[in-house]
Amino acid sequence: LVLTYEATLKAKSFLDLGDQYLYHNRIVQNSKSRRYTPDAWRAFRSLIEHLYDITEKLDSAEMIEQMHLRAFFSTIDCLENEIKFYKQNKKNAIEQIRKIMSDEIIDRYISSIPIEKMSKRYQVYHRLIQKKKPLELIWYERDRVFTEKVIKKKIRQFINFVSENQVS
Image (cartoon, rainbow, N blue to C red):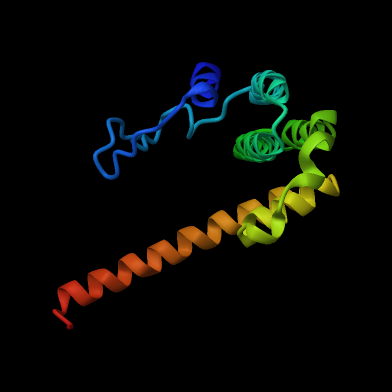
C-alpha cells in the first residue's frame, strides 16, 4: 500500500480502464479480511502514521483531507475486526475497541471528517468514535449486520417464491 500510495502521488497521469480492470478482488469466506486478525490496530496505526508522514511532506490541504478519510476508514476496519471477536471474548474485545477509540492518532483526523456527506452508518461510527462509546458501537454494528442478514434472507425467499410460481 505504501508503494502504491507514493507512486500515485508522484504519477503525472492515470489511465482509466473502465470495466476492463486487471484485478478482481474476490470475497472468500476464510480470507484474512473476513476472519479476526489479532492486533490489527497496531499494524494499521503504523501504516497510518507512515502515510501521514508522506502526505504532510506534500503540503497539500486536499491530500491531507484524503489522508484523514483513509485514517477514518482504516480505523473502522480495525473496529469491525474487534467486533468479530466479541462473541469469543467480550471483555478483551471491548478493551481493544476502547484502546482504538482512545488512540491519539484519532484526534488528528476525527474533527476533519465531512460526515454530512457520508452514509448513516459512517455517521454513527464517527459519532461513537468521537464520544468513545465501545459498547454502543458493538450493539450498533451487531444490530446492523443482523438486520442486513434478515433482509437478504427475505429477499431470497421472495425471489424463490416468484421463480417457483412464475409470477411476472
